[in-house]
Length: 197
Image 1 (spheres, rainbow, N blue to C red):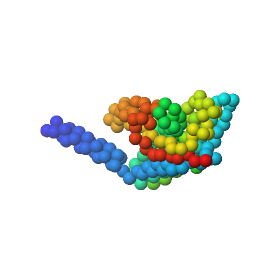
Image 2: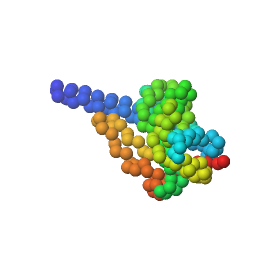
Image 3: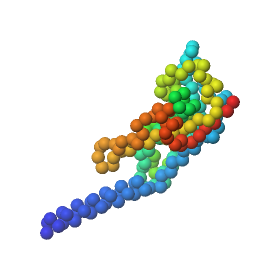
Image 4: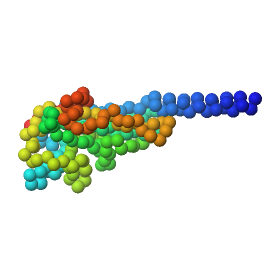
């Protein structure tokens, strides 16, 4: 009889845990990534250092997060890659998410969104550093810009590693390559941007 009580209690706890997980993963949490269709070259910040480009940055869109669920949501910022140009000549730019108050978040960084909270971020794509904002280092030549920036560019969404809710590991990323020549040749773009003068 004692074994049946323990078994029943164990089953109840397992079902209760699964119910909480189901509620968490199906709660009303909205993520809206809005990418602009056009970027004016005058709005692109370019800083040169001799023959090299030390910093380039442009506002390419907005991210809005809203939690209407029952639990706080642990949000992981998406990994967006901007590829300017085609194939082996394409230039790669990473993204930062900047909140109204000036807080800066990187791709795959986590942020807790409490119940009932709405947060807004501007999405910037860039390379190099201006002392306040840091993207990946690039050795792009000054002569590559701004002419090569004009025309159509592509944004790719790299699937992030997801936390394993049962164990301590992570699921493997579905993208092993983040190289622009690979992405422009083999992947479907998340969005397109046209750079105009």
